[in-house]
Amino acid sequence: MYRYRWKLRYMYYMTKSRYYRYKPDDDNESYTYNAFISYSDIERDFVINECIPNLEQDDKMKLCIHHRDFLPGEEISVNITNAIHGSKKTICIITRSFLDSYYCMFEFNMARMESIYSRNEQNILFLVFYEQIQPRNLPLVMLELVQNQSYIEYPNDEQGNVVFWEKVREAIV
Image (cartoon, rainbow, N blue to C red; front, top):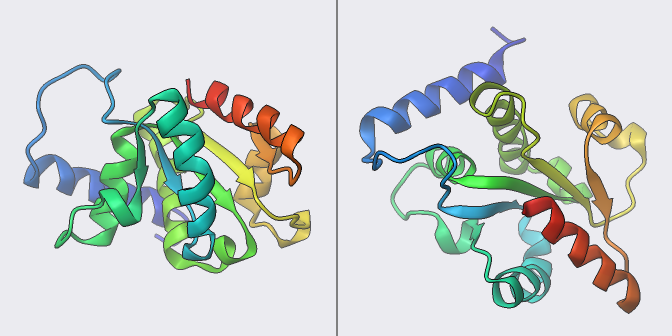
């Protein structure tokens, strides 16, 4: 049970979502959001002041941001799984506070399960390292993703930011 805890949780919430929530019949290629942004509340200013203006306003993308788009009164775990399932990509803003947050790691693991079991191992996770974090401080599953799949580090200079946002747009589209 412990070994498959994330798979079991994912299956539980997806089954619950299918039976207790209305979903229109449409193809799997249409998503409500272009990307779900998973972040710790400490990085809320970065999401509001950088992500939303650079992606939503400039590129006409639709982002799912938990403080804005989650349904009030719904369980947070159901909101998370619905947001991940309804988004084309999941972007995780990785910081030390992200790694320490239960719900951030829950979002990360649910996105991993979504990519494995619902999207035929298609890469839907995109990691943005907002802080410098030593590899030894990363969980093993995240370290494996870093080694095998896409991630990007956030630069703190103006010229690097232009390239950074172009790469994020490419990853979402």
